[in-house]
Image (cartoon, rainbow, N blue to C red; front, side):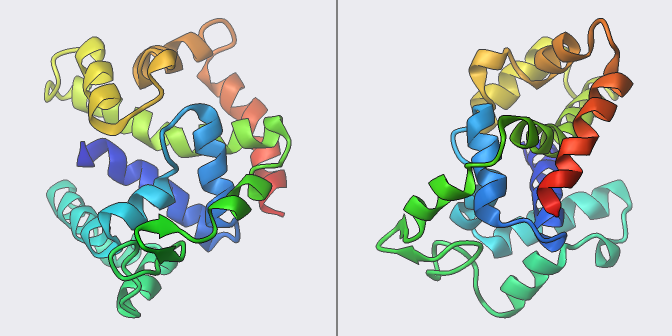
Length: 191
C-alpha cells in the first residue's frame, strides 16, 4: 500500500508547501469519499514513519530523495513534530484527538468545483502508481489493484476503486480533457 499511498501523500504535502492549509486539503479528500485526508493520515501514522516509508520507496525506484522531500514534512520531522504521537504535526492533537477538528469544517467550505479539482490533483499520483504496479505485473489486474486499494487504504469504495473510477471519468472526453478542465479551479484554490 505504501507504493500507492506515498505519491498521494507527497502530492498533498507539496500543496502545503505551495500554501494550502492541511485542513482544506483534507476536506477536499473527505468530500471525495476518503475516510480521512492524506495529512491527517500522515499525522496518525507518524511523520517520521511517512518520511522513512517515502525514503524506502525512493531508494527502490532510484529517486534522489533529497530533491523530493517536501519542506513541510522535513521541517516538522526536524522539529520533532511527528503528528498524533507527539501532539503536533500538520494538526494539534490532545488525548488522541485533533484539537482543530471543528475548524476543518470551515476550511472545507470552498466551492465544490475547486475541491473536486484539488481532489483530482491529489488522487492522480495514486492512480498513476496503481496503473504502474499493474503494468509491471506486481498486481495481476486492475480489479485486484482496486480491491487492494479500497481495503488497504480506505479509498472511497462507492467509486469502485481508483482505476475503475479513473477509467469511468476519462471515457468520452479522455484523460487530458478531464485534467485540463480540473486544472484551472485547482490553481484558483491555491491563490
